[in-house]
Image (cartoon, rainbow, N blue to C red; front, side):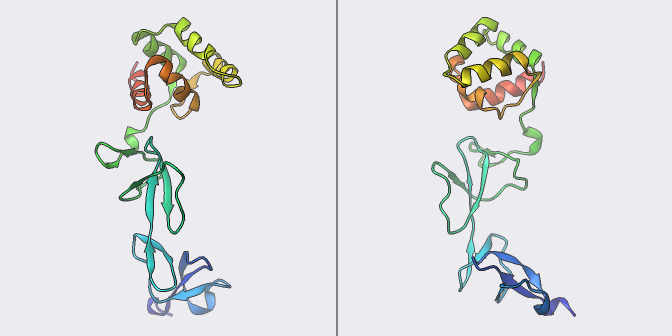
Length: 180
């Protein structure tokens, strides 16, 4: 058997599932005339439909959507990332390299950065006290007991405004704190 004998198949939803020899195709697979182009993976019965790629307002990749509505507030971008862990840089209109990923920081680095920005331990605790339960108790436990902090933890976005920090400012703070 040769590569020329390979046939191309989609599932019942039109999603490309692979190329197989005729006898090896999965049950229920539907043969299509050709391979999908790089930007499309769904066959609508007559042609390949291109995918549309979306991120959230923080640049986190949400996925490719074909024939389905993306989540409310999703922002379309021109192409998918090479690695789904990458984030989108709206200013440069490109994907950040993984080397630009936001590092985890230690409790010491967090407190030193906050102190350097004019926020002492009392200010941090006061900001935590403004949260409603159960976030207040969770934030206090995280602040007092965690040895490392991840930027992706939702409590940073809850507490950031108390210090005048937007999400992008918090990202930068983590990068700066990691160097302390």
